[in-house]
Amino acid sequence: MSLSERGRGHVQEGISFLKWVLYACNIGILVGAVAVAFHWGIDWVTELRGEHPWIIWLLPLGGLSIVLLYKGCGMEKDRGTNLVLVAVREAEPMKLRTAPLIFLSTILTHLVGGSAGREGAALQLGGSLAAWVGRKIRLDAKDSRLMVMCGMAAAFSALFGTPLTAAVFAMEVVSVGVMYYAAIVPCVTAALVALQMARWLGLHGTVGYEMGQAAALTPVSMFQAAVLGVLCALVSILFCKAMHAAPHLYGKYVPNALVRAAVGGLLVLALTLLVGSQDYNGAGDPLIRRMLAGETIPEAFLLKILFTAVTLGAGFRGGEIVPVLFTGCAFGTWVGPMLGLPHGFSGALGMAAVFCGATNCPLTSILLAFELFGGEGLSLFALCSGVSYMLSGYYGLYSEQKIVYSKFKTEWVDRKAK
Image (cartoon, rainbow, N blue to C red):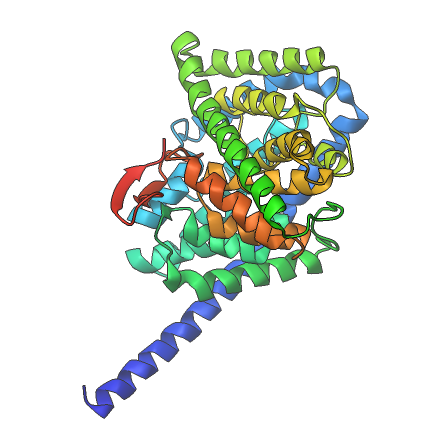
């Protein structure tokens, strides 16, 4: 290659770098602002339900409204987060209407007390907005994929306040075993700009959870963390199987979508009345903090799985990530102390490990532990999450996620998560 050709190559690389920094900054500002509004909306309806607990009696009506909303917009067959993964891997187009639909329907789910999170919904929100921007500026298929990942990272970061986790998750979740390193600068930039936008608008003054004292790194604590990782892998499989089984059971016994949504609302209402509190409605963040602070509820992880599967399987909308973290925290704070680990630290390990087993994203899980809990005990977080990742097999929250490389051998697998 001649010097002139090398020079032209460097110039093109520089232009590409500047182009993507500019794109990412704009996506961070746009998606960050929308994600903040989304955050405010969910917080407002959650507070409203807390002040007026009777609102949970509207669960059947809320489910019906969401199904009718999607049907009226011609999106009744929307695949949720799975469509975002396909948009990145195969450049399948995303419709702009996905953004307002997931925005309104997730807020409605939280208003009436459905068990769901917000970060998974944010992936759809950010991905669809970024895809729309990509179409407007006439990006080709390859660049459109990067743009969708920028939107995913920006929305996750603005909502959760964890920019490194958000950026790596967008690159890691689509194809297990393959990282989209070409997206690292755009995703990190979009995530950081979105976080700054969120902070400028008043969110994330403090980020993270208090877990108390971490265990020291010793052979004993390594063994304890590894055993907890094995058990968290089983819990993550249970969570994924429940999430996939629920819509199939609803479809089999209640084929009509409107009736299914109403029945699902009635079931969540009945479960809430049986439990006697609304701890398992919504995302459940207050109970996560109580458990990390010392509360132990042995049955909490099973109840959260049941509430979430019944809610989302019926047609309500929302994310799965915070319910996964809730499940991991509840399981960790119950089992970890039996293994000899500190209570709060056990809950934190469980959050990272169950998240890792359910999403098949080990690097994201380690960064999540770092950004939520600080660097203390990070080696044990990595061990626990790594064990959970390996032993969770080929199960996953998202059926369109592809396992490209085996978790056990250095060989090509290329199969979808189940």
